[in-house]
Length: 114
Length: 111
Image 1 (tube, one colour):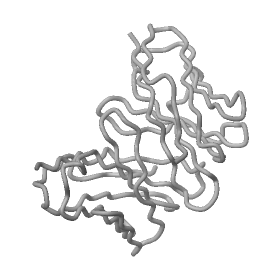
Image 2 (image 1 turned 135 degrees about the vertical axis):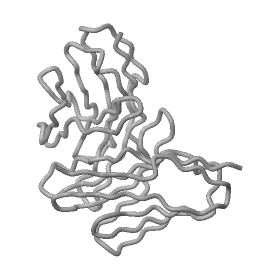
Image 3 (image 1 turned 45 degrees about the horizontal axis):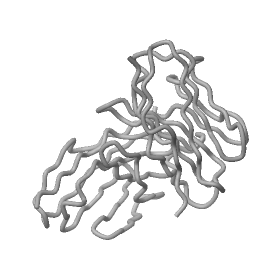
Image 4 (image 1 turned 120 degrees about the vertical axis):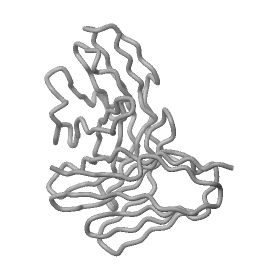
């Protein structure tokens, strides 16, 4: 069964460093998303991506964040200068664009900023 | 602003003891309401989509229902392997189909 994959599973970085989180969405899906979940809190929407551009972003997704689909399979989230408060689980999700609207989530990347 | 409130925050059941989880929502125009299961340290796993009031969906011991203001996830004769956090999320018309999540109900089923 197709699934969303994410790498790495855990990333530790120092404050101020750049990190890139990687995702491979389900192959025939057209809509891609990043969400984050701070420990003990809700899953929060960050950004949606369709047709090679951002379609919507939340207030959390400021100038420190960027997304890219560098090739036909990968979807990346870059944080330019990490802060302590960026520590969270980051989930990638994808949606086919047809039929029902469910999004399928990856296993997540745990980002720890020290 | 779309809002989702789930109750209770935590629920402990004995194996076989049926119960219901609640999800109340306010949304500008509901495109869909989604139920996900989340195990510790893992990503949300899709369970159901509901689109309109009166709709019901079933999967094994789970049944989801929808009204104009809330959704229920009924768990019949739960087993310990049903222990997880159950998340409710809404998707609004006019959006890029992003999901707004509730805080979840942490379900523990004791053997």
